[in-house]
Amino acid sequence: MRTTTTLLLAIVLLASCNQYQKTPSGLSYKITKGGSNEKLKQGQFVKFNVEYKIPPKDSVLNSSYGHIPAYLVVDTARISKHSFLEIITKCAVGDKVEFAMSVDTLKKLGMVEYNNVFRAKDMIKGRLEFLKTFATQAEAQADLAKEQEAEKAKELKDLQAFTAKQGVKTQALASGVLVEITNAGDVQKADSGKQVQILYKGSFVGGKVFDSNMDKNGPNNQPLTVVVGTNGVIKGMDDGLRLFGKGGKGKIFIPAMLGYGQNGYPPTIPPYSNLVFEIEILDLTTPAPKPAAPAGPAAQPQNPHR
Image (tube, rainbow, N blue to C red):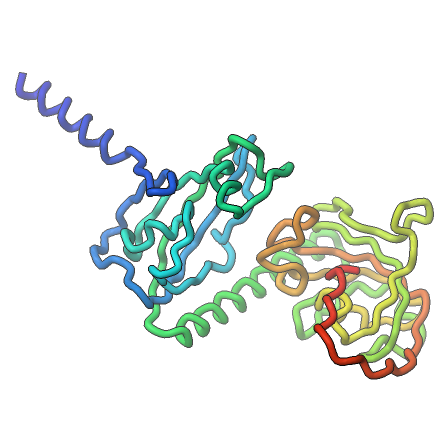
């Protein structure tokens, strides 16, 4: 009898430990302790991994796991409702958290709008793990810089492995971009300040095309005109164009951190996507100097890949 009672008590205790709790805004959460009893404090800079999944198949919306961790400063005066920030001071380094956010609640708070990603009555599932704390912003920034360099090295290694498997001979640039030159074109190259007209086809490493102006019958069939070195295109593309002259053809293999990075370009390009651009240089000229711009609000940036 005593054995049975002890077993039942253990089952009840285990079940209670696995139950989710709720914040005042209705966020469901469960904290799995990592061994430290020292809770996160006001003013600390925190390094952590976080991931969000959305229905219907728990597709990953965004994740830092396996990539660059996230960083924030603990500020109890600016706690966002219906997010893991509501419980951040309950956690310690090493703790893991599972949580669930209601799309309807986020809509009421003005944080999202209903669309094909955030749908009424859906729940967003999340998980996170607190990795480390820093006393100063400088320490956190130094750690972030190391993580960014590690991510770039990983992406370059992945691209090198991909091109080697495909039997593609490339030239590696100092930035980490790989370039396959089919035809270098004229001697005059697309240096900074030169204006180029290009045809391009952008695809993921797996081969799926996400954008192209090479199809004469397609909706986007006009050459792209850009001045090299003016942030008119993503950095990886800008770097690769400099190896080509008029008439040049080839492919530019771009690590994610020189493309759309950890945020991607929703909904077209997911975060941390290595990209391949097939390009052809139709023309290369020196643009006429622009007249001085009148004083006023700063110009809006161009579409990143166009």
